[in-house]
Amino acid sequence: MATPQLSNSRVNIDLIAVAIALTLAALIRFNILPPVGF
Amino acid sequence: MLPGIALLFGIGLLGKLLEHTFTHLRAQYPAVPFPHLEYVLWAILLGLAVGNTIGVASVFREGVATYELWLKLGIVLVGARFLLQDVLHIGGLSLALVAVELILSLSVMHLLGRIFRLPPKLTSLLAIGSSICGVTAIMAARGAIEPEEEDTSTAIAAILTLGAIALFTFPAIGHALHMSQQGYGMWAGLAVDNTAESLVTGSLYGEEAGRWTVLAKTARSGFIGFVVLAYAVYWSSRGLAPDVEHKGVFLWRKFPKFILGFIALSILATSGFFTHGQLTSLANLSKWAFLPAFAGVGLRTNLRDLTGQGWRPLIVGILGEIAIALITLGLVYWSYSHGVAR
Image 1 (cartoon, each protein chain N blue to C red):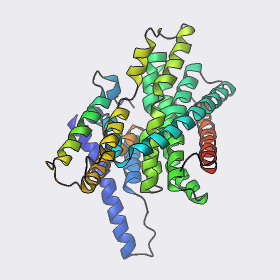
Image 2 (image 1 turned 90 degrees about the vertical axis):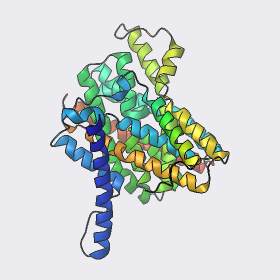
Image 3 (image 1 turned 60 degrees about the vertical axis):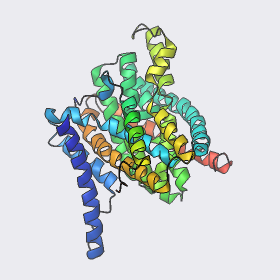
């Protein structure tokens, strides 16, 4: 399957994942995001 | 990109819905043998079914490729569930076990590749994929050793399909051997190659096992750079791949940097930065991130590529994976019976 790979592109998905995770953690820590259920 | 992302979440949510529906139906009609599968498995199976029947239309492909981002986001968020001392102890133990596993599994794969006369670069890809971490390692090696496109697809298909088989066989073996949550989690993290499939294999045994799988698998991923560098140097010495000029830069480029985020969140959690409720929210957010990732790995598994170069690569993959599963099981048992793990 010719599914494109993000890792081939110029963006570093590892760093994007870390940035999103830390942002979400900060939003939760400072109660900007409400409690998340699953 | 949005249609593909919507497809990933749609399949993941359908998996969650199916799990709820069948749980409800089983309670209502206990005599009927409804399937007893968790949402993570449904997500992968639905992805596999869609990807190998109607296929993934081009409008979805860019979004489907984001599954790797969701997977890494989920892993980084799981970092908040670990105390730093556990990361250092079990992560350190995993590193030691991975080092042994690496040497043994690379040797087994090369031996099998030689016996079955596979193209040398396909053998290298299968060895890298099965010893380290599946698709990510194969993709990392692609630029460095310049294999045929066909070799890459075959190696990816073999690693993903064999990982899908582990989803069913590993939990059954774990139960048969009465493995502890931590021991099983370590085994799944060390033996199953694709990260998403490894995490599902671990979590199917229990939530705690799933956490240890994340840690063992993350430690294993840390080796990507070293293994790919070794192969790049080998193939360039034979004039069949470009030279590696700055090895330090090469290692840093190939190092999976999401591991740093995982450790950062573990440090924050250990220092008491989050309340108990906030840690639960972060754990739930990680489950939301894993949902599209598991759907994506199913969509990405192309069974037709498996036999694109005949049956021999698949046989090598199967024999190699069985050997690696046994080697890692032995390593985990040894480390627990000698009190190395706690």
